[in-house]
Length: 239
Image (cartoon, rainbow, N blue to C red; front, side, top):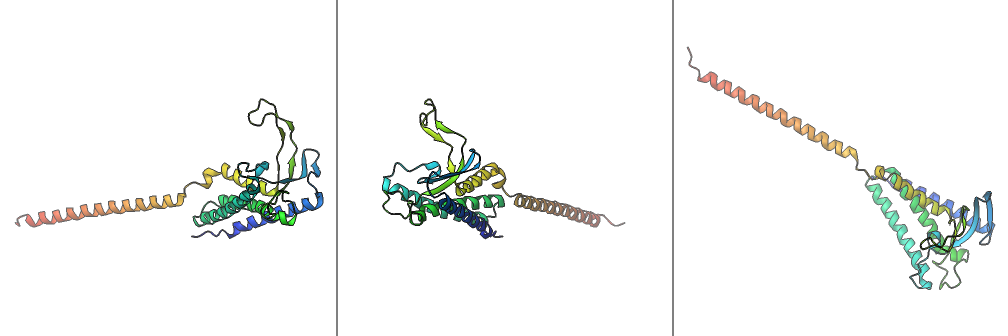
């Protein structure tokens, strides 16, 4: 029976709304990039920062500057539709409900960041100055900052040695994606296991067929014995 994906899309919609409310509030009340509000002392803060790239500020450096951001934005849109189609496909296959909720959370986070990169260049005018168009060049608003470590990394570290490091700042959409992915990784054996009901049904049918075959065999043997007895009786001379 078809398992409707619509209730899972409601979770996606809810996460998008929460994400956008937080981002708009941060933009309105913190106003400028770099402003912050302590929540738990200096450990956890709301810190307004703009992210023009992917997670943790990574960018597509191998693509010429005017086009790197728009390629990233278009990739996000394609990924958004791909995740949505995958969710519908899993629902049709009656996948584990935990997997469906996790995919819905990932989809909500993906769409949340797509809204930023697609429209924020127009709404909040936060596209980089060298952008050829504000469309698809909006910068994602990040705000959650666990200030665990800031400082220069030792030179002996590969790749990042000698560079300044700060604990990544993320948003609600990033958290939704992270929670969805981690949940799938933790419960992957349960989410992707083969349904046992089908195997049990097949086993039961095989057992029934085997019993029927045994009964048929015994009936055939009994019939043969009866025929042999009848023939012997008829062949005996009458006294």
